[in-house]
Amino acid sequence: MVSMTTNVRVGVEWTNRFHQDAEDENCRSPDLRYMDAHAEGFFLSMRDLFGHEGIFNWGDDNAWSTDFDHPDFGGDSLNWSDNVHFCFFAGHGSKFDFNENGFKVAYNIGFPLKKPPDWAPCRSLSPQWRLGAGKLKWFVLDSCQMTVDTDPNHIVEAWGPPMQGIHLLFGFIDLQWVNASSWHKRLSFAFDICRGEALANAWLDTAYGWENPNEPTRPIVIAAGVSRDDAINRRENETLDWLHFDVASTNWLAWKWRG
Image (cartoon, rainbow, N blue to C red):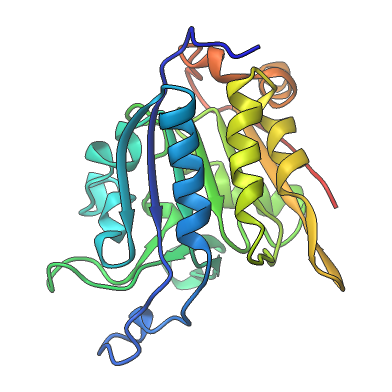
């Protein structure tokens, strides 16, 4: 049964091609494959098959780091990533250490260009995010190293500060492996959540796999809540119909993973 009681605003960004001749080394990341298929498969399924509202679909040179950085850090997130309910990013991601700046760990996503030239570098760092300060409820990071492990100290340090109203964060532990058919899993994720399945379970069920025969792709979901019980309840039961059940303050994180 497909629930159409909730209309969700969806935005996606993806990066496959980078500029190896760029002056800034942060713009010279290795090229990727299939990220467009991942993000656009999710986007088109949500919009065309289930009637949700497609707000933006930016790729390669049209995907900018400022779309994710909060205005406090010179970004424009309140008009883009935090102006939709469900944001999906597919591209490079990694742990980023910043001890000299007063925090031990951050998460980094990469972009091909500085645009315009005086804007931010070709990366966006999680300490510059205020996820949920606007409309954002759910955020997929279809990339490597949303966490490098499941250590509670690491997860809370990395994601406690950026999660400021967002309900659930979806990603991968350490390396994410993809192949030519893995985009089907993002379609399956959209199908499952639009049919009313719990969001966290749908992500773990569809994103887990053995694209690399020597190491599984291990999905993880982090839920925020005003209390321990609230975070656990969202982790286990939240669906798209929870859109307007806000997280008034992020006092607790609860997560689960597969693999």
